[in-house]
Image (tube, rainbow, N blue to C red; front, side, top):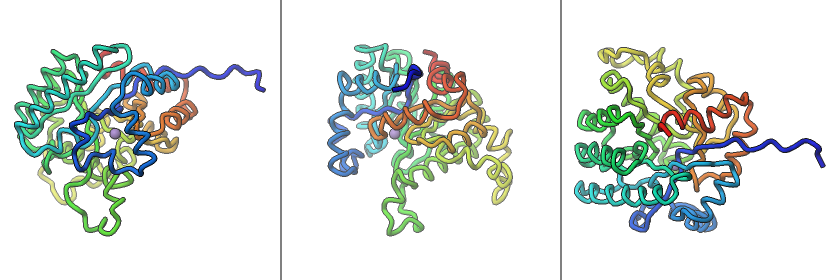
Length: 326
Ligand code: MN
């Protein structure tokens, strides 16, 4: 028996924590259905639930507040624009209800019907100003279209003026890449999601969007989807192949100034240290990716990471509090 008092848990706010409604679970590509039966049942017990297991798990791991979002593929999978608008509004109303019932424990990121960009911008404003949601989470491409396209800039403009972040969550690549052929697991969370999301982010950076909307904040999960590892290479080679971008800054500057990263789904001290050196402590936020990532593993990882007490508190709590104006 140790005579040392166990270290109390650091208070936490987590930002990539998912839910699923019956309507979205009906989709053929509902992510829950892609897991092996044992784990699938475990998740199905948790992903649509807000009053017991989720709260127990939060209490057990020092999580004061979960910022909830509809799980992938969500609204992004809907083909018809009017249907997407209708479903986004109804899922945002549903999410707002959850946060009203338990405002001390839950906040939310809105779903946006990017199928109609103007409606998406208006829905973001409604979600933030009327429903009290804290920003939006977009599940990657919408029917093969990426957020660097000019037609989506009205969404960024609205997010910037509302002062709320857009969380870019992974989704499967649009096409089957030749290099992944024969290895379907490579197109999923193991690898393809990160490559897809990092590339989507670089499209946004190279489009000049952050020059036009310099106060925008894009949030990336999974320890920055490998981008923190690549900053020097990006800056060194971004002129090769296209020299007419006329960007005001280098790629790494946008990553350090317009992007925040969460630790969702990555429980790796070496990745955390790389990210801390690359983008700085103030831009990293702890998250779990509930219920896909084991909360116990994620909590053990962050509580035992080689961080000073003040850096740990920033990453677990203060940075998120500031970003979301809580
Ligand atoms: Mn996730």
